[in-house]
Length: 402
Ligand SMILES: Nc1ncnc2c1ncn2[C@@H]1O[C@H](COP(=O)(O)OP(=O)(O)O)[C@@H](O)[C@H]1O
Ligand SMILES: [Mg+2]
Image (spheres, rainbow, N blue to C red):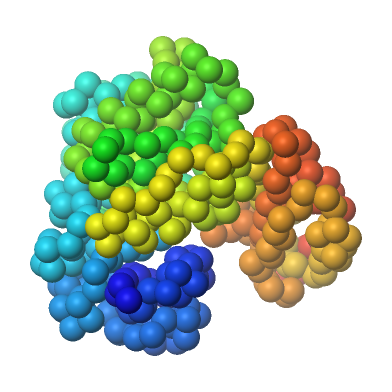
Protein backbone atom coordinates (compact mmCIF):
# COMPACT_ATOMS: atom_id res chain seq x y z
CA UNK A 1 0.00 0.00 0.00
CA UNK A 2 1.46 3.38 -1.02
CA UNK A 3 1.59 6.23 1.46
CA UNK A 4 0.59 9.72 0.39
CA UNK A 5 0.88 12.91 2.38
CA UNK A 6 -1.74 15.57 1.62
CA UNK A 7 -0.97 19.13 2.72
CA UNK A 8 -4.08 20.80 4.07
CA UNK A 9 -7.29 19.33 5.48
CA UNK A 10 -9.69 22.18 4.66
CA UNK A 11 -12.73 21.73 2.40
CA UNK A 12 -10.43 22.55 -0.55
CA UNK A 13 -8.40 19.38 0.03
CA UNK A 14 -11.34 17.03 0.63
CA UNK A 15 -11.56 15.81 -3.02
CA UNK A 16 -7.85 14.85 -2.88
CA UNK A 17 -8.13 13.16 0.52
CA UNK A 18 -11.24 11.26 -0.55
CA UNK A 19 -9.72 10.17 -3.85
CA UNK A 20 -6.56 8.95 -2.10
CA UNK A 21 -8.63 6.86 0.30
CA UNK A 22 -10.85 5.52 -2.52
CA UNK A 23 -7.73 4.41 -4.42
CA UNK A 24 -6.43 2.54 -1.37
CA UNK A 25 -3.59 4.86 -0.37
CA UNK A 26 -2.55 5.10 3.27
CA UNK A 27 -3.14 8.82 3.85
CA UNK A 28 -1.35 11.27 6.11
CA UNK A 29 -2.66 14.83 6.31
CA UNK A 30 -1.05 17.98 7.72
CA UNK A 31 -2.86 21.15 8.78
CA UNK A 32 -2.35 23.87 11.38
CA UNK A 33 -5.97 23.40 12.45
CA UNK A 34 -6.59 20.22 14.49
CA UNK A 35 -10.33 20.57 13.83
CA UNK A 36 -10.08 20.81 10.01
CA UNK A 37 -12.93 19.11 8.18
CA UNK A 38 -10.80 16.67 6.15
CA UNK A 39 -8.84 15.13 9.04
CA UNK A 40 -11.27 12.23 9.70
CA UNK A 41 -10.86 11.06 6.08
CA UNK A 42 -7.12 10.49 6.57
CA UNK A 43 -5.35 7.70 8.47
CA UNK A 44 -2.88 9.95 10.26
CA UNK A 45 -2.89 13.65 11.18
CA UNK A 46 0.10 15.93 11.68
CA UNK A 47 -0.47 19.32 13.26
CA UNK A 48 1.75 21.51 11.10
CA UNK A 49 1.08 24.58 9.01
CA UNK A 50 1.14 24.00 5.25
CA UNK A 51 2.69 27.50 5.02
CA UNK A 52 5.70 26.37 7.10
CA UNK A 53 8.10 24.26 4.98
CA UNK A 54 10.40 23.18 7.88
CA UNK A 55 7.39 22.01 9.93
CA UNK A 56 6.06 20.04 6.94
CA UNK A 57 9.49 18.50 6.32
CA UNK A 58 9.50 17.30 9.95
CA UNK A 59 6.00 15.82 9.61
CA UNK A 60 6.97 14.14 6.33
CA UNK A 61 10.10 12.63 7.93
CA UNK A 62 7.88 11.03 10.56
CA UNK A 63 5.21 9.82 8.12
CA UNK A 64 7.67 8.68 5.40
CA UNK A 65 5.30 8.96 2.41
CA UNK A 66 5.87 7.80 -1.19
CA UNK A 67 4.59 11.17 -2.40
CA UNK A 68 3.46 14.60 -1.16
CA UNK A 69 0.62 16.60 -2.73
CA UNK A 70 -1.69 19.55 -2.19
CA UNK A 71 -4.75 20.45 -4.21
CA UNK A 72 -5.07 23.81 -5.95
CA UNK A 73 -3.41 26.03 -3.36
CA UNK A 74 -0.26 27.99 -4.11
CA UNK A 75 1.87 28.75 -1.06
CA UNK A 76 1.69 25.15 0.33
CA UNK A 77 3.44 24.08 -2.91
CA UNK A 78 6.63 25.47 -1.32
CA UNK A 79 6.15 22.97 1.52
CA UNK A 80 5.43 20.16 -0.97
CA UNK A 81 8.70 20.93 -2.77
CA UNK A 82 10.70 21.17 0.48
CA UNK A 83 9.35 17.82 1.70
CA UNK A 84 10.00 16.13 -1.67
CA UNK A 85 13.57 17.42 -1.69
CA UNK A 86 14.22 16.36 1.91
CA UNK A 87 12.85 12.85 1.35
CA UNK A 88 14.16 12.36 -2.20
CA UNK A 89 10.63 12.08 -3.63
CA UNK A 90 9.49 13.00 -7.15
CA UNK A 91 8.14 16.54 -7.31
CA UNK A 92 9.02 20.08 -8.27
CA UNK A 93 12.17 21.67 -6.86
CA UNK A 94 12.00 24.42 -4.20
CA UNK A 95 13.30 26.83 -6.87
CA UNK A 96 10.39 25.96 -9.20
CA UNK A 97 7.96 26.19 -6.28
CA UNK A 98 9.14 29.75 -5.64
CA UNK A 99 8.90 30.73 -9.33
CA UNK A 100 5.39 29.28 -9.47
CA UNK A 101 4.09 31.02 -6.31
CA UNK A 102 5.68 34.47 -6.38
CA UNK A 103 4.18 36.56 -9.18
CA UNK A 104 7.26 38.82 -9.42
CA UNK A 105 9.71 35.90 -9.67
CA UNK A 106 7.35 34.23 -12.13
CA UNK A 107 6.99 37.08 -14.59
CA UNK A 108 10.75 37.73 -14.44
CA UNK A 109 11.49 34.07 -15.29
CA UNK A 110 8.89 34.04 -18.09
CA UNK A 111 10.21 37.29 -19.56
CA UNK A 112 13.79 35.97 -19.42
CA UNK A 113 12.67 32.83 -21.29
CA UNK A 114 10.85 34.91 -23.95
CA UNK A 115 7.46 33.44 -23.04
CA UNK A 116 4.77 35.99 -24.04
CA UNK A 117 3.56 37.88 -20.96
CA UNK A 118 2.70 41.49 -20.08
CA UNK A 119 5.28 44.21 -19.46
CA UNK A 120 5.62 44.77 -15.72
CA UNK A 121 7.26 46.58 -12.84
CA UNK A 122 7.65 45.28 -9.29
CA UNK A 123 7.38 47.36 -6.11
CA UNK A 124 8.72 45.48 -3.08
CA UNK A 125 7.82 48.31 -0.70
CA UNK A 126 6.45 51.86 -0.66
CA UNK A 127 9.84 53.45 -1.41
CA UNK A 128 10.24 51.32 -4.48
CA UNK A 129 6.64 52.08 -5.47
CA UNK A 130 7.45 55.81 -5.37
CA UNK A 131 10.53 55.19 -7.53
CA UNK A 132 8.78 53.07 -10.21
CA UNK A 133 5.53 55.10 -10.32
CA UNK A 134 6.58 57.13 -13.35
CA UNK A 135 7.16 54.06 -15.51
CA UNK A 136 3.60 52.68 -15.21
CA UNK A 137 1.60 52.72 -18.47
CA UNK A 138 -2.22 52.82 -18.36
CA UNK A 139 -4.48 50.94 -18.09
CA UNK A 140 -2.54 48.66 -15.74
CA UNK A 141 -3.29 45.77 -13.40
CA UNK A 142 -1.89 45.81 -9.90
CA UNK A 143 -1.72 42.66 -7.77
CA UNK A 144 0.00 41.29 -4.68
CA UNK A 145 2.89 38.96 -5.60
CA UNK A 146 1.74 36.21 -3.22
CA UNK A 147 -2.05 36.08 -3.13
CA UNK A 148 -4.76 34.12 -4.95
CA UNK A 149 -8.46 34.14 -5.76
CA UNK A 150 -8.15 37.69 -7.19
CA UNK A 151 -7.56 39.10 -3.69
CA UNK A 152 -5.91 42.51 -4.02
CA UNK A 153 -6.16 42.50 -7.83
CA UNK A 154 -7.24 45.87 -9.23
CA UNK A 155 -7.44 47.68 -12.55
CA UNK A 156 -5.63 51.02 -12.53
CA UNK A 157 -7.06 53.28 -15.22
CA UNK A 158 -4.92 56.35 -14.73
CA UNK A 159 -2.26 58.02 -12.60
CA UNK A 160 -5.04 59.48 -10.40
CA UNK A 161 -6.00 55.93 -9.32
CA UNK A 162 -2.47 54.69 -8.74
CA UNK A 163 -2.00 55.54 -5.04
CA UNK A 164 -5.41 54.22 -3.95
CA UNK A 165 -4.82 51.06 -6.00
CA UNK A 166 -1.48 50.56 -4.29
CA UNK A 167 -3.14 50.80 -0.87
CA UNK A 168 -5.82 48.28 -1.93
CA UNK A 169 -3.37 45.80 -3.42
CA UNK A 170 -0.49 46.16 -0.99
CA UNK A 171 -2.71 45.56 2.06
CA UNK A 172 -3.50 42.10 0.70
CA UNK A 173 0.14 41.22 0.01
CA UNK A 174 1.60 38.83 2.60
CA UNK A 175 5.18 39.93 1.95
CA UNK A 176 4.25 43.51 1.03
CA UNK A 177 5.28 43.35 -2.63
CA UNK A 178 3.06 44.10 -5.63
CA UNK A 179 3.48 43.71 -9.36
CA UNK A 180 2.06 46.27 -11.79
CA UNK A 181 1.40 44.87 -15.25
CA UNK A 182 0.28 46.00 -18.65
CA UNK A 183 -3.49 45.38 -18.87
CA UNK A 184 -4.20 42.61 -21.38
CA UNK A 185 -7.50 42.58 -23.23
CA UNK A 186 -9.14 39.52 -24.69
CA UNK A 187 -10.79 36.22 -23.80
CA UNK A 188 -9.34 34.50 -20.73
CA UNK A 189 -8.53 30.80 -20.60
CA UNK A 190 -6.63 28.35 -18.45
CA UNK A 191 -4.72 25.30 -19.55
CA UNK A 192 -4.88 22.15 -17.43
CA UNK A 193 -1.54 20.37 -17.77
CA UNK A 194 0.09 17.16 -16.58
CA UNK A 195 3.83 16.82 -17.04
CA UNK A 196 5.07 13.23 -17.21
CA UNK A 197 8.48 11.82 -18.09
CA UNK A 198 7.40 11.62 -21.74
CA UNK A 199 6.53 15.33 -21.92
CA UNK A 200 3.91 18.01 -21.34
CA UNK A 201 0.33 16.72 -21.70
CA UNK A 202 -2.46 19.28 -22.19
CA UNK A 203 -5.58 17.71 -20.71
CA UNK A 204 -8.00 20.59 -21.33
CA UNK A 205 -8.28 24.26 -22.19
CA UNK A 206 -10.86 26.12 -20.09
CA UNK A 207 -12.79 29.25 -21.08
CA UNK A 208 -13.33 31.70 -18.22
CA UNK A 209 -15.93 34.23 -17.25
CA UNK A 210 -14.89 36.92 -14.75
CA UNK A 211 -16.59 39.87 -13.07
CA UNK A 212 -14.29 42.05 -15.20
CA UNK A 213 -12.98 45.40 -13.94
CA UNK A 214 -12.04 46.35 -11.34
CA UNK A 215 -11.38 43.04 -9.49
CA UNK A 216 -11.67 40.22 -12.08
CA UNK A 217 -13.14 37.48 -9.90
CA UNK A 218 -13.77 34.22 -11.76
CA UNK A 219 -17.51 33.54 -12.05
CA UNK A 220 -17.47 30.56 -14.40
CA UNK A 221 -15.36 28.08 -16.34
CA UNK A 222 -16.17 25.74 -19.21
CA UNK A 223 -14.50 23.09 -21.35
CA UNK A 224 -13.62 22.47 -24.12
CA UNK A 225 -12.34 25.89 -25.21
CA UNK A 226 -14.51 27.54 -27.87
CA UNK A 227 -11.87 29.81 -29.43
CA UNK A 228 -11.15 27.64 -32.48
CA UNK A 229 -8.34 25.28 -33.50
CA UNK A 230 -5.71 27.86 -34.46
CA UNK A 231 -6.10 29.84 -31.22
CA UNK A 232 -6.12 26.64 -29.15
CA UNK A 233 -2.87 25.54 -30.83
CA UNK A 234 -1.27 28.90 -29.97
CA UNK A 235 -2.55 28.61 -26.37
CA UNK A 236 -1.04 25.13 -26.05
CA UNK A 237 2.29 26.35 -27.35
CA UNK A 238 2.50 29.29 -24.91
CA UNK A 239 1.36 27.12 -21.98
CA UNK A 240 3.96 24.44 -22.76
CA UNK A 241 6.73 27.02 -22.97
CA UNK A 242 5.63 28.60 -19.68
CA UNK A 243 5.64 25.25 -17.86
CA UNK A 244 9.13 24.52 -19.19
CA UNK A 245 10.42 28.02 -18.36
CA UNK A 246 9.51 27.51 -14.69
CA UNK A 247 11.18 24.10 -14.61
CA UNK A 248 8.05 22.02 -13.96
CA UNK A 249 9.33 18.56 -14.92
CA UNK A 250 6.66 16.39 -13.28
CA UNK A 251 3.16 16.86 -12.00
CA UNK A 252 0.19 19.11 -12.71
CA UNK A 253 0.15 22.74 -13.84
CA UNK A 254 -2.60 25.31 -14.27
CA UNK A 255 -1.66 28.02 -16.75
CA UNK A 256 -3.83 31.15 -17.03
CA UNK A 257 -3.72 32.90 -20.40
CA UNK A 258 -5.37 35.92 -22.02
CA UNK A 259 -5.66 35.81 -25.79
CA UNK A 260 -4.65 39.35 -26.78
CA UNK A 261 -4.58 40.87 -30.27
CA UNK A 262 -0.87 39.97 -30.26
CA UNK A 263 -1.60 36.36 -29.35
CA UNK A 264 -1.88 34.41 -26.10
CA UNK A 265 0.02 35.83 -23.11
CA UNK A 266 0.46 34.46 -19.59
CA UNK A 267 -1.54 35.87 -16.65
CA UNK A 268 0.03 33.45 -14.14
CA UNK A 269 0.56 29.76 -13.59
CA UNK A 270 0.64 27.31 -10.73
CA UNK A 271 2.59 24.04 -10.45
CA UNK A 272 -0.58 22.45 -9.21
CA UNK A 273 -4.12 21.51 -10.24
CA UNK A 274 -6.52 24.35 -11.03
CA UNK A 275 -9.07 25.32 -8.38
CA UNK A 276 -12.77 26.22 -8.70
CA UNK A 277 -13.60 22.53 -9.50
CA UNK A 278 -11.87 22.95 -12.90
CA UNK A 279 -9.58 19.95 -12.50
CA UNK A 280 -11.41 17.89 -9.86
CA UNK A 281 -14.78 18.07 -11.67
CA UNK A 282 -14.69 19.69 -15.14
CA UNK A 283 -11.67 17.78 -16.53
CA UNK A 284 -13.22 14.38 -15.69
CA UNK A 285 -16.66 15.51 -16.97
CA UNK A 286 -15.31 16.83 -20.29
CA UNK A 287 -12.54 14.27 -20.99
CA UNK A 288 -12.97 11.25 -18.72
CA UNK A 289 -9.47 11.86 -17.31
CA UNK A 290 -9.26 11.58 -13.53
CA UNK A 291 -6.77 14.39 -12.92
CA UNK A 292 -6.87 14.03 -9.13
CA UNK A 293 -5.87 10.36 -9.41
CA UNK A 294 -3.18 11.25 -11.96
CA UNK A 295 -1.77 13.88 -9.57
CA UNK A 296 -1.63 11.37 -6.69
CA UNK A 297 0.07 8.74 -8.87
CA UNK A 298 2.61 11.14 -10.41
CA UNK A 299 3.54 12.28 -6.91
CA UNK A 300 4.42 8.67 -6.08
CA UNK A 301 6.59 8.24 -9.17
CA UNK A 302 4.04 6.42 -11.34
CA UNK A 303 3.23 7.29 -14.97
CA UNK A 304 -0.59 7.52 -15.00
CA UNK A 305 -2.80 7.24 -18.07
CA UNK A 306 -3.83 10.76 -19.09
CA UNK A 307 -5.32 9.95 -22.51
CA UNK A 308 -8.84 11.40 -23.01
CA UNK A 309 -11.64 8.84 -22.79
CA UNK A 310 -14.33 10.96 -24.50
CA UNK A 311 -15.10 14.57 -25.41
CA UNK A 312 -18.05 16.28 -23.77
CA UNK A 313 -18.87 19.77 -22.54
CA UNK A 314 -18.57 20.72 -18.88
CA UNK A 315 -19.21 24.01 -17.09
CA UNK A 316 -19.34 25.64 -13.68
CA UNK A 317 -21.20 28.88 -13.01
CA UNK A 318 -21.19 30.85 -9.74
CA UNK A 319 -24.23 32.66 -8.33
CA UNK A 320 -24.20 36.43 -8.64
CA UNK A 321 -26.44 37.87 -5.91
CA UNK A 322 -26.97 41.31 -4.42
CA UNK A 323 -25.09 42.52 -1.35
CA UNK A 324 -26.92 42.01 1.98
CA UNK A 325 -27.79 39.24 4.42
CA UNK A 326 -28.65 35.79 3.06
CA UNK A 327 -32.29 35.23 3.99
CA UNK A 328 -33.41 32.08 2.17
CA UNK A 329 -32.63 29.76 -0.72
CA UNK A 330 -35.28 27.67 -2.44
CA UNK A 331 -35.68 25.61 -5.60
CA UNK A 332 -32.40 23.69 -5.21
CA UNK A 333 -34.04 20.26 -5.54
CA UNK A 334 -35.89 21.33 -8.69
CA UNK A 335 -32.63 22.71 -10.15
CA UNK A 336 -30.80 19.49 -9.28
CA UNK A 337 -33.38 17.55 -11.31
CA UNK A 338 -32.57 19.46 -14.52
CA UNK A 339 -30.91 16.97 -16.91
CA UNK A 340 -27.15 17.56 -17.08
CA UNK A 341 -26.82 19.21 -13.66
CA UNK A 342 -24.06 17.34 -11.81
CA UNK A 343 -23.60 19.35 -8.62
CA UNK A 344 -25.05 22.35 -6.79
CA UNK A 345 -23.17 23.76 -3.81
CA UNK A 346 -23.99 26.71 -1.57
CA UNK A 347 -21.03 27.68 0.58
CA UNK A 348 -22.59 30.47 2.69
CA UNK A 349 -24.94 30.02 5.65
CA UNK A 350 -28.41 31.53 6.05
CA UNK A 351 -27.97 34.76 8.04
CA UNK A 352 -24.45 35.28 6.69
CA UNK A 353 -23.55 38.63 5.15
CA UNK A 354 -22.97 38.61 1.40
CA UNK A 355 -20.47 41.30 0.48
CA UNK A 356 -19.47 42.67 -2.87
CA UNK A 357 -17.51 40.11 -4.89
CA UNK A 358 -13.88 41.23 -4.58
CA UNK A 359 -12.37 37.74 -4.35
CA UNK A 360 -13.26 34.07 -4.87
CA UNK A 361 -14.14 33.65 -1.18
CA UNK A 362 -17.01 36.12 -1.55
CA UNK A 363 -19.03 33.89 -3.89
CA UNK A 364 -22.26 32.28 -2.66
CA UNK A 365 -22.00 28.95 -4.46
CA UNK A 366 -22.05 27.22 -7.83
CA UNK A 367 -23.68 24.84 -10.27
CA UNK A 368 -21.77 22.27 -12.35
CA UNK A 369 -23.21 20.70 -15.52
CA UNK A 370 -22.18 18.21 -18.18
CA UNK A 371 -23.60 18.04 -21.73
CA UNK A 372 -22.58 17.33 -25.32
CA UNK A 373 -20.94 20.73 -25.78
CA UNK A 374 -19.59 23.54 -23.63
CA UNK A 375 -22.40 25.86 -24.80
CA UNK A 376 -25.04 23.35 -23.71
CA UNK A 377 -23.35 22.79 -20.34
CA UNK A 378 -23.25 26.57 -19.77
CA UNK A 379 -26.94 26.99 -20.58
CA UNK A 380 -27.84 24.13 -18.21
CA UNK A 381 -25.91 25.93 -15.44
CA UNK A 382 -27.72 29.17 -16.24
CA UNK A 383 -31.08 27.41 -16.23
CA UNK A 384 -30.33 25.84 -12.84
CA UNK A 385 -29.21 29.16 -11.38
CA UNK A 386 -32.39 30.83 -12.69
CA UNK A 387 -34.48 28.08 -11.05
CA UNK A 388 -32.96 28.75 -7.63
CA UNK A 389 -34.47 31.63 -5.70
CA UNK A 390 -31.95 33.38 -3.46
CA UNK A 391 -33.41 36.04 -1.16
CA UNK A 392 -30.94 38.56 0.20
CA UNK A 393 -32.27 41.26 2.52
CA UNK A 394 -30.58 44.62 3.01
CA UNK A 395 -28.03 44.65 5.80
CA UNK A 396 -29.69 46.76 8.56
CA UNK A 397 -26.42 47.35 10.40
CA UNK A 398 -25.17 49.28 7.40
CA UNK A 399 -28.27 51.46 7.11
CA UNK A 400 -28.41 52.50 10.75
CA UNK A 401 -27.52 56.20 11.15
CA UNK A 402 -24.26 56.75 13.00
N1 LIG B 1 -2.05 41.76 -16.78
C1 LIG B 1 -3.35 41.49 -16.75
N2 LIG B 1 -4.19 41.96 -17.73
C2 LIG B 1 -5.51 41.72 -17.68
N3 LIG B 1 -6.13 41.05 -16.71
C3 LIG B 1 -5.37 40.54 -15.72
C4 LIG B 1 -3.95 40.73 -15.69
N4 LIG B 1 -3.48 40.14 -14.56
C5 LIG B 1 -4.55 39.62 -13.92
N5 LIG B 1 -5.69 39.85 -14.61
C6 LIG B 1 -7.05 39.47 -14.22
O1 LIG B 1 -7.12 39.30 -12.82
C7 LIG B 1 -7.40 37.94 -12.47
C8 LIG B 1 -6.63 37.52 -11.22
O2 LIG B 1 -5.24 37.73 -11.44
P1 LIG B 1 -4.20 36.57 -11.21
O3 LIG B 1 -2.86 37.06 -11.64
O4 LIG B 1 -4.67 35.31 -11.87
O5 LIG B 1 -4.18 36.42 -9.63
P2 LIG B 1 -4.85 35.33 -8.64
O6 LIG B 1 -3.68 34.60 -8.08
O7 LIG B 1 -5.57 36.16 -7.65
O8 LIG B 1 -5.73 34.43 -9.46
C9 LIG B 1 -7.04 37.14 -13.72
O9 LIG B 1 -7.76 35.93 -13.79
C10 LIG B 1 -7.41 38.11 -14.82
O10 LIG B 1 -8.81 38.12 -15.06
MG1 LIG C 1 -5.28 33.50 -11.21
